[in-house]
Each structure stands twice: as C-alpha cells, then as structure tokens.
Image 1 (tube, one colour):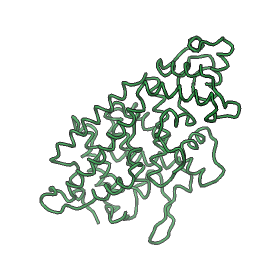
Image 2 (image 1 turned 135 degrees about the vertical axis):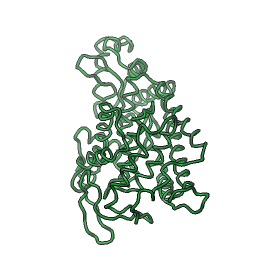
Image 3 (image 1 turned 120 degrees about the vertical axis):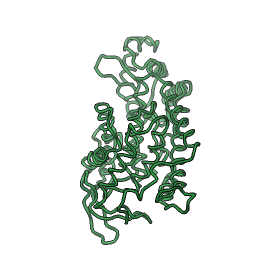
Image 4 (image 1 turned 60 degrees about the vertical axis):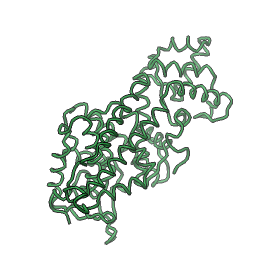
Length: 405
C-alpha cells in the first residue's frame, strides 16, 4: 500500500519531443475554432455542448441519459421512472458544476486548480446536487452500502482492478504533492497542456474519494484547460472523445499505473514509458475532438444544414417539437441564417430578412421563439440563435447518438 508521495513519481513524462508537438497542435487547433463563428453564436454552441458533455461524462460511468431527456430535466420535466429520473438529476448536477467552475475561475483567475482545496470543492459541489440514491456505493467485499459524503476524502482503503490506492491516512500528503507538482503557474509554454494530461491520470491514481473520482478528474481537467486559458475550449470537450474510446481510455489509465520495469523506464517508482503512452492517448483524443468540431462549425456547412433542416420540416419529413408545429416555412431559414451570421438581430431586421409581410413574419418569428430555435432576453428585444436538442442532431450530425446507448 502506498504511503509516500514519491511512489507516484514521475509526475511528468520526460524525453518525448512528440508530446510537445501534440500539445502545440492542440493549442493551435483549439484557438482556430474560436474564429469560425460570431461570439454570440459561439456561446449558444457552448451551452449545447455543456449539456452534451454531461451526457458523455456520465456515459463513461456506465450511466446513459439521452440529451433530449437531459434538456427536459433542465425544464424541470422529469421522467416518471425513479431510476431514470435520478440519472437526469445526475446530468443536471454535472451541468451545474460546469457552470460553477466557470464562474469561480472568472472570479479567481489565479486559482491553483491542482490545489487539494479546489479538488475537494469539485467533489462537494457535485455530490451535494445528487439524490440520496446516487450518493451510495457498495463495498464489493463486504456488501456494505456506504454513503458518499460530499467533499470528504476517503477514510478507508480502495482497490480498483489491480491498483491499490494510497493509504487513506496518507492522502493529504499525496494531494499536497499533487498540488505543488501541477500548480497552475508552475509550467510554461505548452507544458501546462502536457501537465493536464499527466495529472488527469495521477489524480485517478491517488483515488482520493470513496466514489466520483472519474467525474472529479474530468471536471478538474476542464478547469485546467479553462484556467490556462486554452482558447476555444468549450467549443470542444475531451469527455466526448474519452467516452467514444471508453475501452481504450480505461486501458490507458490502467497501463499508466504500471511500475517502472528497468532503468529505461525512467527514474521514478512508476513507469515513465506508460505515462508517456497515456499522455499521447489523451492529447490525440483532444486533437480528434478539435478536428471533429472544426468540421461541424464550418460556416458554409452549418448554413446549408440550417436550410436543409427547414426544408425537411416544410415537407414534414421530420417531426416538429410540438403537435402544432409540425411544419416550418422556408423563410425560417433566412431568419436562422441571419442570426447565425450576425449573432444578435433586432426583430424588425428579422422581418425584413424574411421578405414576408409583417403579420406573417411576426407569426413565423413567434414560432421560432416558441420552438427555442431563437431566444431573446426580453419580449421585444433582439433575438439570437439557440440549439435545442430537437434540432441539434440535424445541425450537428454525430455529435451524440440518435438513440440512447
């Protein structure tokens, strides 16, 4: 059983120039995403992806709640089945945590995201939002049902597959070493990206909580990228990539637990070679996601998909969100495309763009607002584009499965 923080060395991979090349490419591609859309439209994409990210993060844990049902839960529309309703609440907890993390980073831009106080806070704000049924974990050896206390470092020993976590009484020492080694202002250049990848594994290796370590590790990684800041992050998220390669992700985590085999494996207790492999997998996954989202956010393609969606609605080839809204006039495409391009558009401008008579134009604008395709902060204020889940699957194909996994 691990008792000395030196047993989780090395904390950073060494001797691998290609990791720096991968990290530079992640920075470059992520930043490029930020220039593809109007900032107001970008924020609508970020809001959609926050919902999608909660779906994928929980999917890694083996819990699947389709994005449509997550969106329903955001409107306080819960499923009748208690187990599925609890999973809806689990997704809501993740979304609320993401928002709280973003708010805290704005208020405390110099915060050390590797600090044990911050990591404990992530666990607390997540578990405080869960129903009691999801705050319980079963001891596989004894069958005892244990309560997971929000923000409490584990008080007992754990074994995950072949890995035995550090002794519970020594966890503060391990977390303090983690906080120092991965401090947000300690690394420079592209090293913070590599450090984020390495620390993702090492936090899982420490396994500081009775349950929820995977969720906390992913929320922590999100916080690391936002703290840097990694420009464009939020228009893509690593959780989607990890969930879509779940078996490879779990194998990479397990392999990075390996002890050093010989002098070629580095100088620490753990293998430098397998830590390199995990970081390479993690950064490649980040690149995959930036490439995927770059394709989805190309302006010409998005404009075409908006037009195609409206055409299919007009022909009633796909259903509308409500019985009274099965069809959609083609002029709606002009309004939605204008909002895409300009970010925020006055209602009078929208009517002129549509080319319709004022009365029929206002009716159509009202429908788009009622369906959630456009949103406004005030009853007569400017409108902007929105991406509810009933249209997201058409405008962003393959972003999430059409059916529950």
